[in-house]
Length: 287
Image (cartoon, rainbow, N blue to C red; front, side):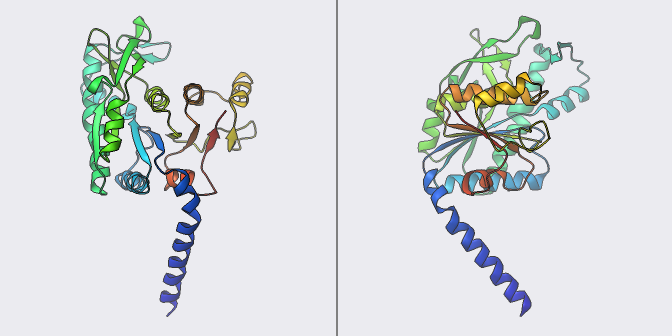
């Protein structure tokens, strides 16, 4: 009897949650949401399964999700396994011909297909591609000293828009083509921001391994403006690995993205909490 009462209580709570989500479901109907899934945020098979289920649910309620992934830890593992030594310039890996082959193999192969398979296993229709496919991302070199490390010069989102019409979920590996046809490795956050701007996305979600942007006391700042970010960066409050993420957020907003959220991708159902509840998750940045 007690068990039945507890189960009924759970069902009532579930129904209440669905009812409270209605305004958000309406708000995001036909919206484009770009999600950057970092290598550290991919976690275990259980975490990947949960993420994939959330993505499929988002599409089922009318959202057009786009996944851009990283894969740094997996690349490092493969380079070590193949005994390929990397050189670094100012803390950044030099990407030569041998390294880019491994990068493409890991990102477009192992990592990309794992995400695609996870989404498809939950009933979605995910398709893996890289920035090289259909001229999605054209690159210029960031710095000749870094070799085949690129920065997006031009984004053609038409292939992604075609996939939306066919109810497909794009999963993008952060690679691009140079003007001479060479392959470039691109920072995953940069790709996510550039793709979101090209699509004029409603939201860019940067899933990372921290709760969000924190103030001087260590508390997560739930809502921020570009001016606040610039001031906190100048004061050294935003530092280290958070700087490129906030820079990506600012570039995306300048490019036409309505808002960017930096949130902990390890938290269960982080994307759903952000989009469909009053609670939200992480740090929301908008003009």
